[in-house]
Amino acid sequence: MKRFLFILIALGSFLEVHAQHYSGTYLYATRDTCNLYLDVYQPSAEASPTFNGHEKPTVLFLFGGGFISGERNNKYYMPWFKLLNDNGYRVVSIDYRLGLKGIPMRFDLFHLIDAAKKTQHAVNIGVEDVFSAVRFLADHAGQIGLNPANMVIAGSSAGAMISLSSEWEICNGTPRTAVLPEGFQFTGVMSFAGAIMSDQGVPDYKTAPCLQLLFHGTADGAVAYKKMAFGRRGMFGSHVIAGILAKKGYPYNFYRHKDHTHDIAGHFLATWPEQKRFLEENVMDKSGRTIDAMVDDPAVPHQKSVSLSDIYK
Image 1: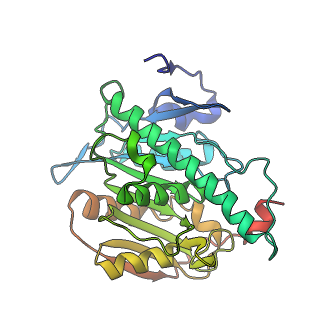
Image 2: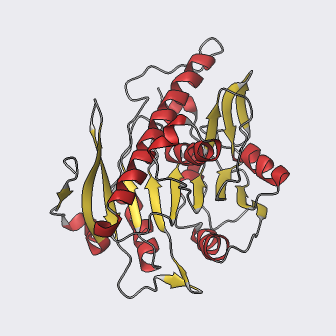
């Protein structure tokens, strides 16, 4: 495959954590505007690759940044990647196109619909990139050492929106899914402050979605905890998604962090116990367990509120 590229990177001492489990960078897609890469972080040699006899999934991660910034290899994520690796999980962190970079965004009454359309486009091209990455991983599973039928997608903020939308598109068989391996489905979604953009009203699932783990602050001013809708077009947050799943009887885990803002998008380490239990009991043991909890935990630090105007000023 001409586009297949493996790059050995010389790492500085400031990314010592990165060096411990990093195994390579791959070019997975070439777009008109950029090349897209993914990094692979392998499980620790001493960690068990199974739980109760079940193979641990690979975690496919999408960074946050409001569709205007962010890096797949930002050192902020490295302690969490290492935690996953040390618990036996492979991590694949990917690029995706930043669909709002350099795009003027206004959120006054006269520009809300325009802002929603632009955000929808950014999500859509992000989903295209996710599906290209999945196709690449399936085609090169042997070289990378993963099972393409056992992947959990995880994302923060904008990355969480793309992750949730990728699963929604799979369940609804949209044209973008044509690139995926036949019958492909994620084994789980982990969303850190995510939502689904829709121009068709409240999103629905035509087929049963994979297991979903949702984290969201109830006072999030950047990605709607409930919804931000204008007619049938809008952003439908974790509260709405959980309601849809509950109504249909699909198991899910939802941790509603009381009075937290968009800070939950970055609380990977503080929420590890809930992630671990979800991966072990829901994804691997298939327990069918549903959790919908309001969390007021002083161990999860509160951080300054961020609004859409702050992000796109």
